[in-house]
Length: 237
Image 1 (cartoon, rainbow, N blue to C red):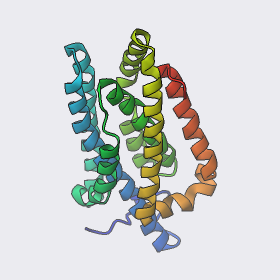
Image 2 (image 1 turned 120 degrees about the vertical axis):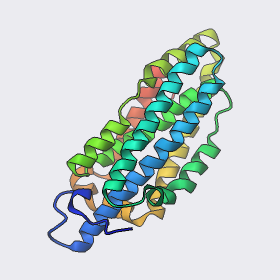
Image 3 (image 1 turned 90 degrees about the vertical axis):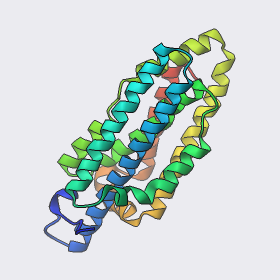
Image 4 (image 1 turned 135 degrees about the vertical axis):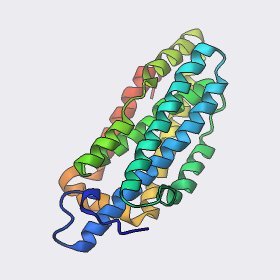
């Protein structure tokens, strides 16, 4: 890999002050982009598989469209990593085990569980990334926020899950338990990634006090957003 500590890769002007800090920030940004790129690539394959679980063509089409959007996100992230003169495969590789393990532990057993995972599980991860995006340079922040924008599946998931609950109220309890498990696994994955990737952890820790607020408040916001999603689905959290 070439030097990652270019000024436009980190937050603010990395050309002044402590060069070590600038390099650490750039490495942290690259870690975030690598993680998002692999997560988007994995989402493409997963959503395509989930679409195959649907009983009707009307249900297959929306998820297939979301899968295509996720691949588009991957291409955008890959392009940004290449602009940093880094091989995208090298940037993604450190996160393969953590992301794959998460999906292995949270494999849905049916169509409805796959929808809840796409909405709730992926949603809380996206909320975390949006929060982190606040400390990035403007160009990278705009890219991350664009990648995390709703791909149009939320409305479809909410309507489908609510219809299923109306048809069989017993479904609600099972899906609520499944959603809580997803959140626990997602938070555990985030902790694992931060523990294993020192540049990313340092970037977050170095900016938390001034721009993200304390970690407790951040996770409180994530919890509030999760509760809102549960309510939208008609599930008791």
